[in-house]
Length: 512
Ligand SMILES: NC(=O)c1ccc[n+]([C@@H]2O[C@H](COP(=O)([O-])OP(=O)(O)OC[C@H]3O[C@@H](n4cnc5c(N)ncnc54)[C@H](O)[C@@H]3O)[C@@H](O)[C@H]2O)c1
Ligand SMILES: O=P(O)(O)OC[C@@H](O)[C@@H](O)[C@H](O)[C@H](O)CO
Image (cartoon, rainbow, N blue to C red):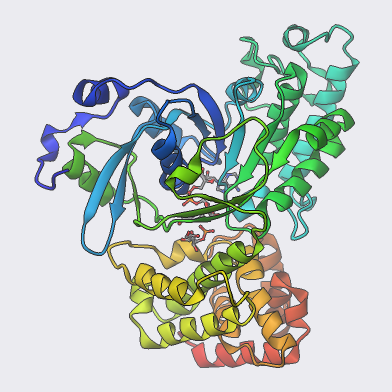
């Protein structure tokens, strides 16, 4: 590691070049499929896997979510990338080797192939909370046209396929072409045959869960055995949540597939933690200076990392515990601690901090007012967490240090995205629990009120609920406020103390 390298001397990062410099290492076979190849997956699951995979058994085939950018950047580097660990005092860098393929998420043929392979044991996902396109109860969101279109496409494709008597097995499925109502291109190559041309033209499911079901159907037909699905997004009971959505969507498409999923797919719940901002152009230069590699897709993250998992891995898993992951029976206390204390405070800082003119978490934390609100929010949240077993005092102290790390430029605008979904699980539970105990829930209301103020101000906030937000904004102001809060949780909108508190925040921040 060095900080003095001239970037003009850098060498493009590839497995061949890495092997020449550090000695060739075996490239592991694909045994993990990842959906949502973003910064966090690389800083977290790819890092954990790289730490423990000393026998090179666990390669990751990582698919992008909405666009191919990450695959286009990583493919010329054979999936390799530099992970920069950035503490308050300095940087260290490692080349992570666990991703062996970076693939455009629209490449359904390759997805089908890897999911139908018996050696594939795990699917991990990081597609953001909104990316699952599920309702708060975990059911497919039928108000979302992409979900409806995928459900119809899968149903038609699977039915056309089932009608074809020649489908004795996967090979026949490929030859049959599987056209039917699903589109002329059909499902050619469903179980991993070379004949994938029909899927290249953009025909097929477009949502992540729709694509996953296509792959699982291929696995069922190939009789490739059980598999674990491991969501790694910040959602409560993420395993159960995704299981509910996947199973419901499957049942709408094919009873055989839904029954197979019930019998063969294990949904693992996780609590994931590692603050990982978006990569900036400066990070590319930092990576080159640290390593001498020319890397077009480095990731910067904090030194801290945590992974708590609960569930079965019927086809095996890497020994992630060797790198610090914990496997527990009851994940709820851990996920609540993380979602409420870390993510809840992040959302509070995002909305209140943006209103006060800050751009990053560390900058907002340097404001005594924001810091005080965070402390107050944590006091409220810990009242509703188990008093023992969670080391809450230490956890809070560590959070302050992590949030204060100004070398991690975590943008409040990034955290502010998807406010409806995030406030629902990070803030609403604390407000409701405090109100049930007769308290005023002021810190949680500060977060809600700040979000409402930003939405009313017309500030552009990314949100999958944009249609509902726009509808609310079309109402007279007082009704709009009620509707916005009801989108997060109707119980909040029904509480006059909560609504009065939100209106007080709005008055206080008017003109901000
Ligand atoms: N970044 C962090 O600090 C962090 C920490 C813990 C957990 N997470 C979880 O990981 C998720 C991703 O974070 P990231 O930093 O990798 O973000 P990112 O923007 O770098 O990557 C997100 C990935 O999800 C895909 N995606 C986004 N919206 C989608 C949609 N609607 N449908 C399908 N795919 C979609 C993107 O295309 C991309 O592949 C977060 O939303 C969070 O739930 C992130
Ligand atoms: O990633 P999101 O958009 O769900 O939330 C933004 C941050 O709160 C989150 O990414 C945290 O940094 C992360 O959860 C820390 O582990």
